[in-house]
Every structure is written in C-alpha cells, then in structure tokens.
Length: 215
Image (cartoon, rainbow, N blue to C red; front, side):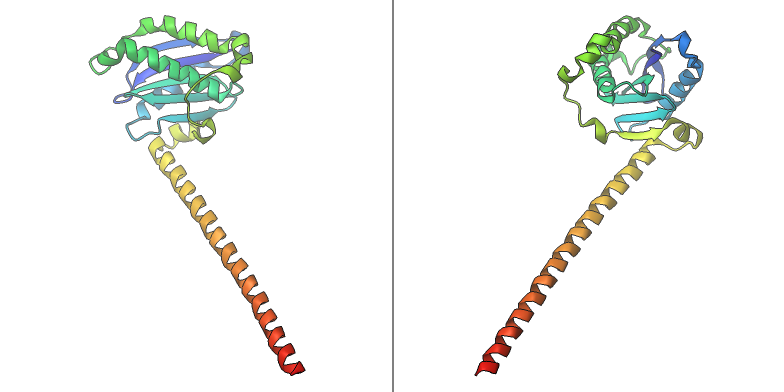
C-alpha cells in the first residue's frame, strides 16, 4: 500500500520528519502527492481545524494538529478513517515526548529524520492485516470521526482557500442546520396547538348548541 507520512511545524510549514512507502504496482505518482502534502503544510495555521480529511481521488490525506505540529498521513481512501487518526495520535504522543521542546528551535528541514524508524514501526502495526482485523478492539479517545471536516485537496490548493475558511463555512452550515431544525420544531408545535384549539372550539360549540337546542 502506498503511504506517506509527514510531520511539519505549523508556524512555517517546515518539515520535521517524513516516511514514504511506495507501491510500484499501483502506478501512482507519489511525487505529485508529496508536492500536495508540502503545499498543504504551508497553508496550515493556528486557525486551521485540528483534524481534517482531504480527498485526493482514490487517496486521502488525513492530518492532526497538536502542540503546534501537523501530523499528515496519505493513504488509500479505503483505509479506515478511525485507524488513520489513531495512527496519527500515536505518532503525536511519541514525537512530542522525544522532540516537543526542540520543535520551535530547529531551522533545518527534517531535523528529526531519525524518527522515521518509529514511524515505520508504528505504521506497520496499523497497516498490517492482523491489526486491521482487530480494528474494533483499538482503544482511542478520538472524537467521533464522522464529525471531522472533509474537503477536496485540489480545491484547497488550487483555489488558495484556507482550511480555516472552510471550517468557518462548515460551522455556519451547522448553525443554519440547527436553526432550521429549531424553526421546524417551533412550527410543528404551533401547528399542533392550532389543531388542538380547533378541536376544542368545535367541541365547545357542539356542547352549547346541544344545550340550547334541548332547552
């Protein structure tokens, strides 16, 4: 399976570590994905959503931002999203323990390239078939992956639209959706009250009519 993992500093997009696994039989242009990954890292900022999935055809970019560092993982679209973010969480925990205090001080690209050894080992534990069969037993504290924002990598890179802007649009859509549901509930309640009132008026009218008719 073709995979790419990049760890970069959010402040300036400086790559800190990376690991590449290319599947020659897939025929994919990994250099193209590498270029997209680097562009994406340079676009991220403090206002970007801390978790996001970017669709790139039959591949997906998943990223996690924590403690000023972006952990980016490229994998096949069929790879479970929860598994991808569990992998990124594990990378973050180990990377921060080893290099957290030095992240802001380095100036050379790939200053922590030796972290590739840990990336390779961890990735195998998630990509391995047996690990995927035991997917349901993975214990993580990840937020619901269904709520993680999904966008298209080409739209983000070509249009120059910031992920923070996309996140704002998603939040606005969520707010509008909630308002719509609230308004619909209010209208349904009013409709119910109106029906009850109409029935009550009919019953009272009938009672008055019968009473005066028979008296």
